[in-house]
Image (cartoon, rainbow, N blue to C red; front, side, top):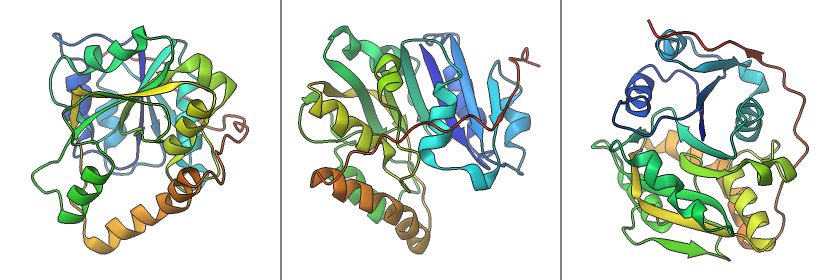
Length: 245
């Protein structure tokens, strides 16, 4: 399996995330691709200390769907895991547990538990509870389009048939899983694959970020659209896998 990480100005956390991924006790991914959209804080210098493939795009090229599609287009494994650059695997078994549900052929995607960091705000905690990522009970979903690319995985063969929507402002993951569910696939929630993930940001910034997801989330819960636009031709620059320093 491979891991795709989207990043921009994540120097504070991305080193910890990559160190956890490459921990000697963890399941080793075949490829780790970092799609960076214009970092200026030293993120790229940190990333290049690890055996990763770096893809750089301009900030004006970025959408969540485009950056993710570009990363997935540069891996060749059937199972692709995704992490936010500030999503820290909570233990060395994270990836092993995340991919377990794929033993069931009908499972199209899996999303793991998210543990709030110490600076998580009340609004974040409410949102995490409403979306079920704090739960400790595994489940299989055939109707409710719940998912998170902050800590998720999916079958690349299904992505080749239906890529992530590159035009929506946010919640491209929700749009994708709804389409998979309509096709008869299941989405698994795996609480034994937790990461530490929250933003701890001021309320106005939190509301601006959350507002990008609202149109897509409402549209998919109300069955008004499922996304899945054509993948744009990759415009980024791909670097080769360097050896660790």
